[in-house]
Image (tube, rainbow over all chains, first blue to last red; front, side, top):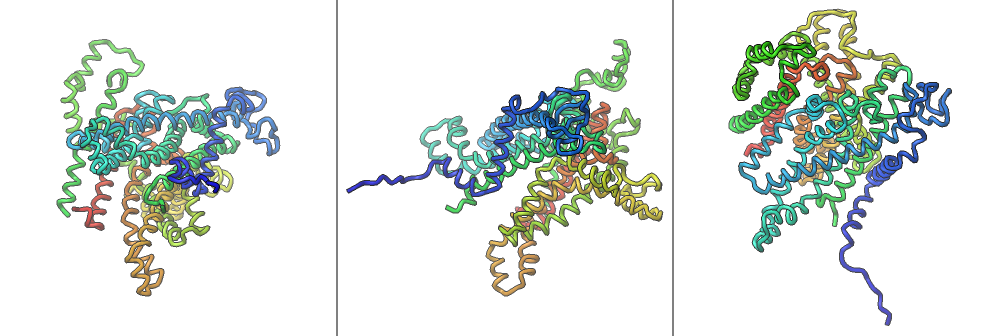
Length: 296
Length: 334
């Protein structure tokens, strides 16, 4: 008799996640685009045809290569001081992804910590924390970020700090709500009875079970951070020229909208495509991580 | 209902105090003191500096200054703009109608298109119509609106020359403001063509400002509708033999709209943040552009007063949304 090994038991968490995530075609597309943008950002010095700040005086406002007067070595044309737009966009991806990463890290770390404290201890601590969050949420995020940057001084770092601060209340609220739901469940009471300390209960017992909505919110915060940083750059309060940040590039291009459509069109398109890809991924993550939507 | 309303109002008080504290401390966080900021590049003697600090009451303890400031705010005194030399509160009142008009038009457009789009997408779930509507909505949601505004301007104002580039009405028309709303004032003025001109100036900023709320409302309506369409009472209504139009339009939509109303209320913050960008692009003379200009000109009294007023508006609208929500959904009240 021959014996066959049959794999039993649950598939790994990652395989299960991928199964649900990949059922959403948009999410897979978004993921693919995001990986391409990420690779372009990492490999920028290799893939970019020119240096981002290299100015060629003879080639000001050169149209894209497929138009009359365009040159093959400047695929998307040049800007008002003769810099290659494609190269600047590729280097710009570094800034946008970096901003998203820093903002999400800062706001997730602080937001989750504060939300965990509020939801776990309740009482006065909770009321105090939530009132402060209400105050931050009473301002339109972009306005508060704009004023904060005006106080701290314009620049990329200050823009990231400001955007993290206005993003953070969402994580506080979400973590607090999730912690409050989980805290009264049997498994938490069980480990409390078994003698687990406060820190262990907070970070090892409760927090891992609150992660799903946080991951989805983190994705949304990532794309929102890219948009807000670009908006601040556009208003002249984010990254400063000649940094090839996409919003800053748009601000510099504004005066040429009547003469050279390409200097305005491509940076915005880069922002839109990147943000759209991340939001598509966010929708897929929500489908894959939300237990209510799972059929099994 | 009154208790519910008063309870909500009571929560607003500490929030408003916190907002006023932020607006108050903002100027104190800047390097230097207010007198040095006002004097700018000019050199000032120590005695003169101390004298002005004393005259303005800036040498008193911080908490005294704060309560003084709070007292002024509650009586409508937000300080004086160093650029326009007018009281900040008066500037706010004269510019706010422009932002309000733009925001109201944008939210009307967003609701009139977003709710039907969401309903149809939910009813025709999984079809190409649903997928395209939700695809477009996600693009709208991801849109950098400052770029979207520039694109529309290139095409409609530059290439087609259909719409003007910036401002609220053509310079050919002049009439005293009655309501501050250009659409109403232009009608009241009785001047031929004034209303049409005001509309042509309003179209592009409205489209730009409506884009994100429209996408959010369409997505929210669809998911609320999908939830409701699976409920028992909808099945009952269907099995009674009611027409699909009645089932969807009357039975389902009324309940699906409850979360949508909250979403619309939450869009006020989005609209005011969007107004900052939209007004800057289209040189629309509202409070968004006013705030950006104030930040650049270091007109701190305006930044301080504007922050407070804008947060106040958002808080009041949120209160109104909460109360409406309690009104249409009595379960919330308890």
